[in-house]
Length: 162
Image: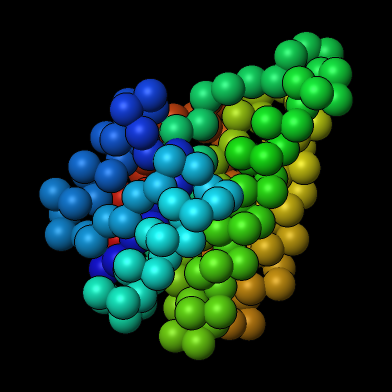
C-alpha cells in the first residue's frame, strides 16, 4: 500500500505518529508538510515514480489550528483556507486521476470543525461531502473526519484505510 500524507512536520506530532503507524504496518509513506505547493506535488510524484500507485491520501494529518471565534478577519482567515480547503483541493486534484484510473483509493480529510462558526472548516466539510458523491462511481472513497471531536474515530479510519 502507498500513502501520501499532508500536514506532516515536527510541529505536528499527531501527523508524525500517523506516518510512523502506517510505515510500521508496511505502508510506503510519502509525506509533505502542507497540502498545497511543491512539497505535496513532489510527494505525489515520488509515490507514483517509486510505487506506481497511490492508495491513500490523508490531508491535514497535522490539523489542530482553529480559526478565531466568531469569524476571522480576511487576513487571518486566508491561512486557514490555504492550508485546509485549498490545500485539500490541490492534493485531491494531484492524486485523483491516478486513483480513478486504478479504480480504487481512499481519501481522508482531517478537519477541525469543532465550531459551526469556523468557515474554513465548514467549507472543507462541504468539499469532502461533495467528493464522496462524485467519486463513488470510480471506486474511490472520501471521508471527512473532525479531528478534535473524535480522535479515536479518526485513527480507526486511518487504520481501516490500510
